[in-house]
Image (cartoon, rainbow, N blue to C red; front, side):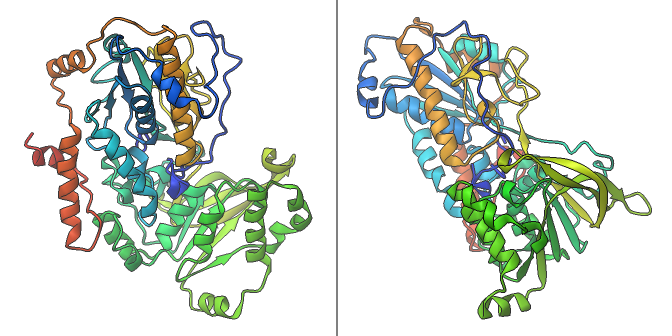
Length: 514
């Protein structure tokens, strides 16, 4: 999972809040549908009676959820709450749970991570079990899970990033925002990223919440991060950073930005910084925003005021003392990463100047033929997270990066479901994922009640445990995680931090006596 299962990040999260606005929800009604009859969730308020319809004489359903991020935990929570005998095993490739809540939410947004308390309550239930350190698709096949459980739900998120696919992308100094977020948030696979922050200027490609998260972390005075759960290794690098200017670049204009007003307001008020917005980018916008939806209108009005209005006395005084700047550059699309004279690292980026074709959020960026070179020593690509296929037996749409499904039911594979970003694309915040996951859980329970799932007993984890043991795989339990959690909290206590995250899986296993 991007990082969870997988973020982007910039997306749980209202970026820092889980999230990327990179892809719109997908509708699969044009797919051939033969395995299930189309059903709708019961009306609001009918859930309690729905729960009571399950017979106490039936076999306790054994259900498997793959992925322990918000989608996985919310799906498990719904199933356990609305079926009195269901047992849910949650499989996770990391040794630790919580996916993008742990590895994607910005360290200076601790309030967003409070949802971990709810997930912990779910994981401690007698009818729920966490099985960490198990890579589905490698250690165990989806077909083996389907044979052992009455139903399998794939909730493994979007653990890859969208490539720029431009020359020079491979140069040292070019990173995905997903990897950068994973680095400062302690994702084991990114712990050795070692970004060089000795340059003056950084460029972030993309204008979503994750882009703003990354910009904010780069420019936040390190002393303001010392009491967060950012890793000590990342904090050490940030203390030595020489980055003073961050440009946040988008292909389209102010009416198409994907970040939210909360994240923008945080950037505008960031200590020690001042914003740079070109008033020319906002010409004619005052009249056009009258017809846009309320949330978009409020966001654009804040951008417009910041770009065109003279700041008040207090704000002007604050900006006058700022040592760092950040800016939004609109109507620019990355064309080529420019190398240093010796060819050993990034020295800038060539941007194609664009114009909009169409109106509103559906407007597309078209090149004008002009280009602009922007010097920089660091390029971070924040153009979206992407899901990967998990197993050859599972249908996957590589173009859209999702599992073809109908309201969470995987097309033409009875008993297989999906929820979260791998279901709808990497978009939305935690509340979006919660609603989406509850819907998948509802569909599964409807199918169970309708007799569309196997009725006989299934061995569940007993069968999978034997397979994993024969393959030398030793799963980590939730009580194991709680030991690691206590160690992290203990290590952070001396520094006044909520925790100091463990980064090395081998060290984690040693602490567990493995």
